[in-house]
Image (tube, rainbow, N blue to C red):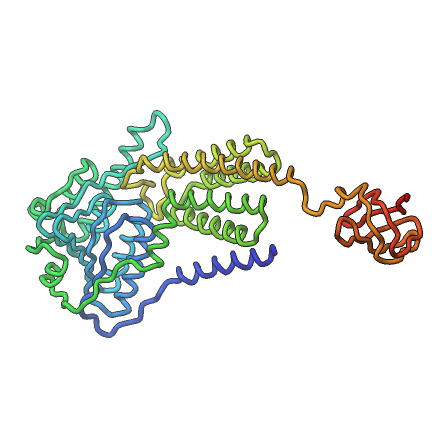
Length: 438
């Protein structure tokens, strides 16, 4: 059974590895045409995977131009750096990367602003906005808040300046998006040369047409792989999956079924994969594992205290995920560009309380099952009488009918078929009998 569980987990991990394998672009004698992709989501590992695969696809299609229709509130710096690297990889390949802020009312904030400014060209539609790229840095030691924040903001401002200057746009105005959190409406962005132009259209299709993209060109959006990476790399989802996986295995301990064990182990593996993609602090993951161990300990202690301690340690580990944001892949400090929903903490506390209550509930069920009289309990037949169905030599075994059922019986006496016997002891499913006195 353990081998089956291990093989299933290995198969799941292998499937993930195959899905995450990169696609290499082919060499092109001539580059021509457009490749269009659209992202309306946060900047996270799933978005980074989407842009990376999109750039590979654009290169494989020998597309001279790639139009990236973008709308985002921001995300984490590691994913942002990865996406900027994808843009630069396409540029080094010889392609022209265009960011389009559309449709009307769209916005590109925070981490999205760095991605846009790394593009060869940026176009906006009327009613759109770009900017507000000040990093949110957590886990700063007490007394170092001002110094650390100043260093981090200066680092990201320098990064923004470098990206903007490389494309010949106004680096000074772009740096204000970082240092002062400035956002530019479409007309102001054009006036300050933060972008290359404004397209007088209110729709994505209209803007693409003005850029010269054929109407037949498909607009590519995140596929299943990128979407799953986004979902699993969300620390809320990964932490919840980890907790549910632990509880599934715990429930299987109380009520053994291979299905719950396999599902629980698979869910825990997916959760750890998601936390790894997010770049969660090792300390946070360790605390979550320790919390899970205490929850398992409840099987032995059976008084609820271990479950409460386990959930408390698990929640502490979850808090540390946000206190220490994901590490970046480059020289920039770790930072997030979007806040943490307050409902996250309330949801986790509610789930933790539910696990404790469910653990106590499982314990009460187990205690009730232990107190319930066993079906066909041989010890309950001690003192009952029956009749021999076969002959039995002293020290041997035979068959007797006791309480309307046939039982294997042992006796130190010689017994004949039809003799009346009395049960004097029970060991396992074998009854010890003696000849009944008439």
